[in-house]
Image (cartoon, rainbow, N blue to C red; front, side):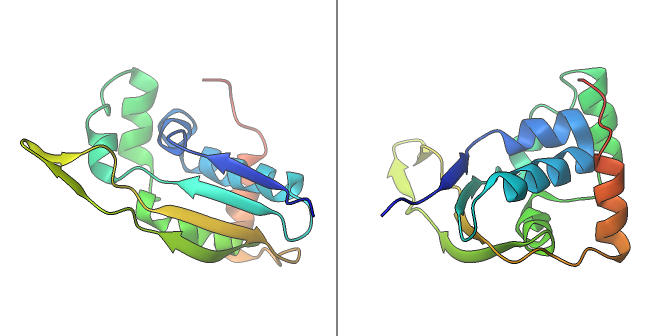
Length: 136
């Protein structure tokens, strides 16, 4: 038995900050289009606090930080609107050290490709705006 899957760990923040909300939607659409039927997509989303640490790194990132409307915690909902069904969320246990939490404690979202979504309204506008993204 062969399982088709894609993994996106620690990159969504950078896509979001460099290409904005449209970049996140484009990533999710590309993943959807590349997965086989019922293929699996594993997604790690960094918290907003992680975004804040680099919000002034470049002018592009600063501009996108200021204009992005999509919050990191809303990305799984957008994925579902675009046809990726959330089937499981893994919440890693916190490991405490002498100086607080050790390592990353980020939920891992597991999606499965569903039927072709009927994209309307806000999602349709997002898809069309994501189709022509500039280079960073």
